[in-house]
Length: 303
Ligand SMILES: Nc1ncnc2c1ncn2[C@@H]1O[C@H](COP(=O)(O)OP(=O)(O)OP(=O)(O)O)[C@@H](O)[C@H]1O
Ligand SMILES: [Mg+2]
Image (cartoon, rainbow, N blue to C red; front, side):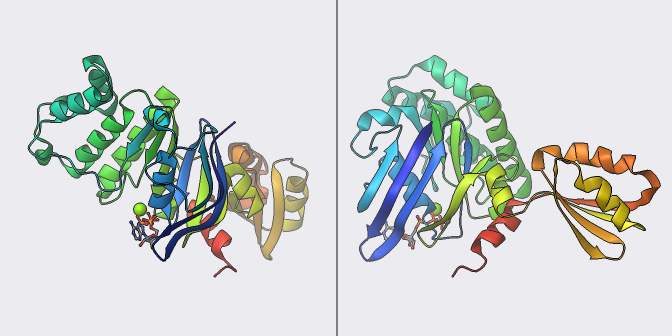
């Protein structure tokens, strides 16, 4: 069942078309990567989902309802803005208590989100003293208030150093697992959400390039995981592999090298198969499918 649907949505800011005829769907329980370069229309799309703005043309539906018309949807949504503004002098838990109160929630809900986001040691710290990574945890904590069914997180890893970035991604992964909450996460760094996302929407200059489950997109653009096999007898190896149901394609790269495309879910099985070929295989190399490769294929031939 779809939780978000865009039907030919155009959003204009004055003369700027931030979204043009954008149509896509996002299923429930997914972690969706909303990917595109700066100015693509990611924040615009998220604001439409949140109901902060209304489309110039077309229709946005969240759980089948139009968010800009329906205040009551807001309580089911959690939002991390692109550039959150917090009172730097305030204490972490005080801000959370305050935001909880605005939503009609009590202390126990604040305790819950502090625990979930690992903010315990910093609950009495001034917000201004937090590292960027912990600032982002605070942002994620407030987005979780009220047990939303869908989290809309606008570039949660932007402006973080690599270690903090990892931490935030790990946290989001854990939250998805523990809470079973749907997430839409934007990033202008295309490969970044690789590990956490299972669905993606690719957007550029207001236009939806493509969208779907990663599994479908890998197949569609033929960016399945790929093995390069070195062998003295490519013909024999190819013959043995071609029978396997998880092998999608085999190509000869050179007299001693084969390229093998396989089902993403089955690469472990494939490794086993290759090892069973024994001495026939001199060497093999695994190249995993990557969101960056996918994006490249999707954008190739466009623009
Ligand atoms: N309030 C606004 N007024 C005028 N133009 C706007 C406004 N908000 C966005 N835009 C324009 O709409 C386009 C899409 O902007 P948007 O913020 O949605 O992109 P984005 O994908 O979030 O980019 P970024 O990665 O930089 O955050 C850009 O050209 C931007 O300049
Ligand atoms: Mg943005």
